Image (tube, rainbow, N blue to C red; front, side, top):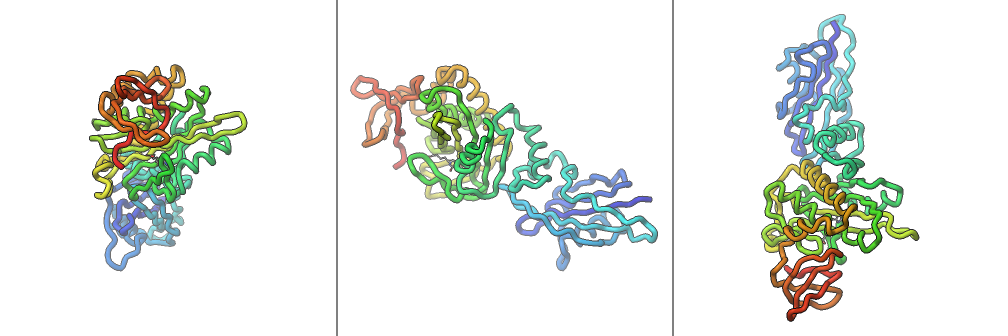
Length: 378
Ligand code: BTN
């Protein structure tokens, strides 16, 4: 009889066991058996010993550990896990030496828990495979999000993607990071978020349109985010040029930056930060979070929404998004203060024009504002 048993333990940051993975080739009933959440580590036990004990107790297999595999740690936005592998042998004499089933083999992961493993921090074969499988099922796009990099930390996803764009990254390339050390916002502002409370990512577009059309891409991104959030039941609206608000508070900021060469615009990096969790108390008057959502699923939805809006825009420019611009614009018809390059001008918003300008009514005249922002909180 051939008996090959391997066990691996997944523990979270605090050491609580999330999952015991075990496999016993030759035992059809136990191969691929999963528990999630799994058992617990008894006082004085190593994680690997606990895995072995669980296999013994629950599967009734008489095994002894031969060697522990150096733990592998992966950090995800939702939690950090450490995989402890342990090679085991059957205790009975004469049994063949067992072989360890590669403890990072992704086919050990139960399909319904894939998302937990998927928001990967490092590019290991396991994580790459999981990510591919996850996106294979959740990401409904042809282009945007298909070429994805998940980082635990980076300076700014925009910077990372601009670098990749210089190196020839394709349209649709995605960079996601759990933590940005130098996240930036529009007009030189800092974008800071508590760990785990934000979905920060950047997508690369390579528009073929002339610069004046390409310059309207931030509005496309705003529409895409607002639509995706509305599809989830949030009352999201667009504040020109590209903030997304819920209940008049900011839930998402967008920063588009161009990759240029002597030929002109080669690409546009669309950086999006969504407050997915909660926002610090001190910012609660101006910012709002989604209250905790599955960020990977939301990311897939945002990519799909962006792709749909981008496609319409690529063929018909902003006029192709007219109905959305009018419906989602949460300042249209309301008194606003606008900050163009200098000063502040008060008036009534008359919506967003086909070239992306904000239309501001003052003293019965409608004036297009081409750059700046609607002042709200400062
Ligand atoms: C703003 O509100 O001024 C825009 C904020 C944009 C933040 C996002 S987070 C992902 C991407 N990386 C960055 O450094 N900034 C954008």
